[in-house]
Length: 307
Image 1 (tube, helix red, strand yellow):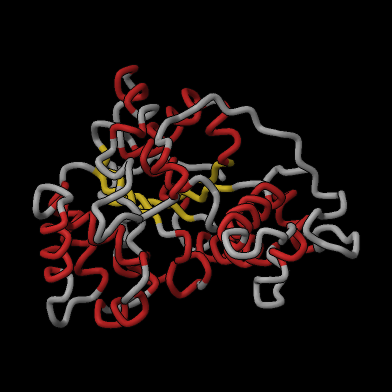
Image 2 (cartoon, rainbow, N blue to C red):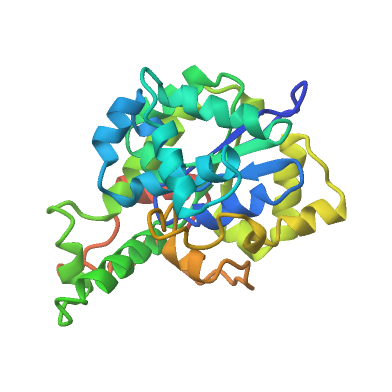
């Protein structure tokens, strides 16, 4: 996807991707540029109002990322007390989710805020909400090969299920997705993103494969910085290779420990990355019938340059 230069940098960058596409790592990397500020997962645009947001996420760890962000940005640090105060702040009446993100945008200005919530890509109306509320936002469509994406989700599911059912295998874990083949989440999210971006001006969107970015971070981080019209000097690019310096590159306090990928929180570093060979044509290891990817998935993945 080509991009063109606009009149100035944005105030908000939104990373669009399905879950398990390295978004926690990439958001932290971009957020370490001296002109950027990366958030944990906020889940803001999965609801229109904060009342709906609380109803949808109350009692789950999906409130952790936004609570940590408010504690850090508004209250000055991620302590248990500040998390409690942050949640009170987030319960103010008559707030929309755009109100909350707009507050955070203004509080970190002139830095550019980096927001990512993979679940937002599951419904196109979530994506349209972002564009309607922030018409000058930029969007980075972050890709991952569908095989790597599904295997990552299944391995994560297996890890949790084997705590109580140690005999489970990959095929059985795939059956725990409500009867839906787990490959379809990759297709639904990426199809939504493609459809949404068709109506976004060319200078405000970029598409990048995560395998390319992580294999050659210097080159691809420079491309992102040039697109965003921020500094390209060596120190700025080097800073982006140190995601561990983010205030969110760790587990949060006991009352809000999450807000992204737990594997990143355990080891929040950019490590040497070599993309493994993955194919769209072979039988899938989570299917007992020997079938491979559906034709629509192969077609969409090939349009992204995957084989």
